[in-house]
Length: 351
Image (cartoon, rainbow, N blue to C red; front, side, top):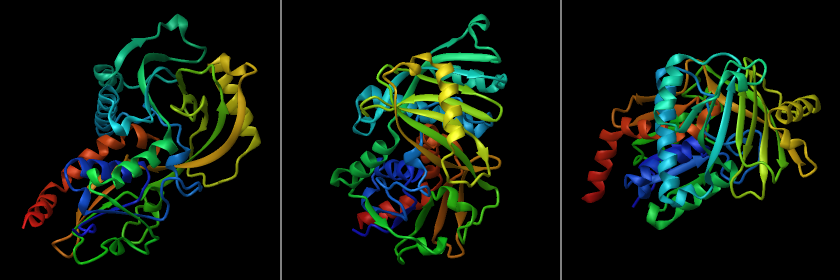
């Protein structure tokens, strides 16, 4: 059975989520994931492993963002509830989130409809400068381990034995690996701005810096959404008390260097948000910079018909900082867009 009927271009959380959705629908044996960087890699050009990894209110208020957030949250909660294999590095965690500026009414109404245990924090309990606060049960994710775990699951025979190939392609047309390739899912993240065949000028990186600490006393997720900053404390499941502290939202900033003054700011802000971080148990393990693959107008999940009428590309990129929380929802919609062509592949495999 050829594995290149379907190509997933990119092996970050978006590409892995698409491959997982396809595998669940019975197409695993038809898939090759092609990427320059694969789970386990540590490079500034591979964003997913650097993520805090959680479900939060960081996303926008547009219709698509709210839809993908809802799908992603409900899907992840179901996986955890069922003890699904792919939920190994996911955990239910109490979360407190603060907004300096009042979020839109649409956003609040949307998320409280499906969040578990939502409680609005009384105004007299809000920190100075905060307009709105919400406490609920979230999902936290051990980002690097989760990506490696998904690759392992997808590679198993019961998932269809999805093939992973490390390769740097020159253009989108090169993703059609052979005459048999009928569908390409384009999940290339930050590369979408300059990749021949895509060249999306709406795309830009959003720089962030994190501090990785060992903090055994931290058991909750807590975030403060500012106008031009994000402060967050995100514990990583199954990580020996590792916690991600952040951070920054620097639109269009491509500086890959860790900055000591940003580390100091992160430690100060997170310590004020969660004072238990200031105890003697907290140990700094490292610092890192990452680039969220952002896009003006929000993520692009869209089908493109190639000049060869028998081939299609489904674009799925531009999730910014929401890849882990919205990725499963985006994957469902992306795969749905290709449903007709996927049906042809399934029919062919029966012959």
